[in-house]
Structure formats: structure tokens, C-alpha cells
Image (cartoon, rainbow, N blue to C red; front, top):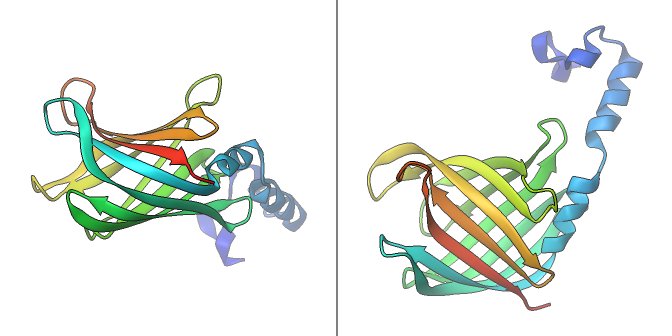
Length: 187
């Protein structure tokens, strides 16, 4: 069909063989080890926010109650947060999964504190599988900058704690951590 029109065929399906295309569809739709890693997030968490306004990381005073659950079992998680940030009530929403075609983790999130829809993609970057790094861009409404490079580092500390570190790659030679969300599992 239409999904495989023109140059959209993967290299291993160039001959348009329907049987081969069905095998590829099955291959790229399989749930694998990267999807299983996402099970770690499922549950209720409490988060704290730390922020760097040029003086190093300090508690921001905000945070919230967070819940991660399967939206599409084994494939995509929904993460929802209700709390406060910068002294204001906030709500955040995230979709997190693993894309077999891109061979990357993918994340999209939105917040009640802005109108942007942020997207990032990346991989596990350490041999023990305790760090996922995704990269994306942000539009910085405080400075008017568009498409600034950002790095999101998911650090698994133990079974009940993880951090999400946000880096502004436009600061300094190799970027700077500007925010850190610290999560503790509640149940």
C-alpha cells in the first residue's frame, strides 16, 4: 500500500515482495529488550525539582506527584505529573517509548507552563544500561531563541530512584545542566 510508496521502502524491501514486507512489519513491531527496560518507570513517584540559575543546582521548591503507566502495553508509556514549578501550579504529560526503526528511545512531552511540544530521541549510553540520553531542541521563550539543542539524561540510580537531568547545550563548551527532576518511587 500507500505506506510503502516511492522511496519509502526500507532497503531490505526494495523488491516490493508482499511476504517480505509482512516479515519486515513483524520485525519492526516486535517488543524487545529496550521496551522491557521501560517497565522500570511504571508506578507512582514523587518528584523534586532542582534548578541552576547560574549558581549551581539548588532545590527549586517545586515538584509533584507522578504516575507512569502503559498506554500501549509493552510499547509506549504515559507519564503524568501534577504539582508546582516556579511557584505555580503545573501539569506535565509525557509519552515515552522505543522506536525499532530508528533504534532509539523517543519522548514527547508538554507542560501547562508553556505551549511548546518538546521531542527528543536517543539511546542507552553506558554498558550497564543505567543511563539513557536523548537529544532534542527547545524554543526558549525567556531569551527568544528557537531550536536550541538540549540533552535529557535519564539516570537510573536504584529500583526506587531515578533522575531526569536537562542540559542546555548552548551554554559553555559542552553545555550545562540547568534542571534536574529527582524521582522517588511511592508504589
